[in-house]
Length: 254
Image 1: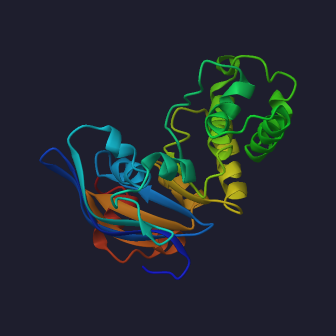
Image 2: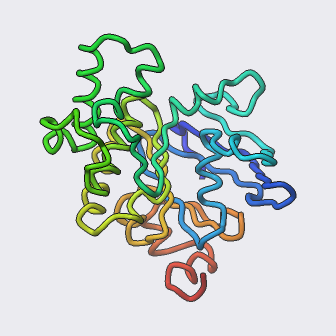
């Protein structure tokens, strides 16, 4: 499926952990200001693809990429591309909340400070803006100097989202961001995703098919490293093109 408004494209991407081929000829377009969900059974390549989109897999020894990942017209795997800059522009939120053992304020300003934001006024503005975007400001505005580790799991995950947003990314990658959370916290993160897509492109890996149906505009179904089907979410869940997709979403395999 091709669109004119894609911010990231993968072209014939293969990915290897040593000799194991984890992704096979994956070609996808991720549309700007939309939510794309990646679904499929465990070990099918969803999280591998997600980490490939901001070069997080570079940090794993013995991995190799073939093909192209085009981000705003540039192949991010070209020589001379700075992976740190790519990760600043394509942020990531992980499965388990991973706040730094620092204050709430310092969690948000950690990345911006490394990137030269020195003024206290600028830091305070950034903290408020990022926490407001992550729907957390009202809950923490009076305890910014308290350790982030004292927050609940759901609050910690929203803090991690705020921390990613403080870097002013274009794209936000989310690797099962609610799998460690209770239903109320999950609902808050899902509401947040709907808000954030006004300003960001979001790509989410989820094992929860109901969640994919609720939050995403497009869904890609993966099986054994292959992209089996990629379609608008409503179509994929109601009239899938592939028999394999239908069998997976109706629970007949996987």
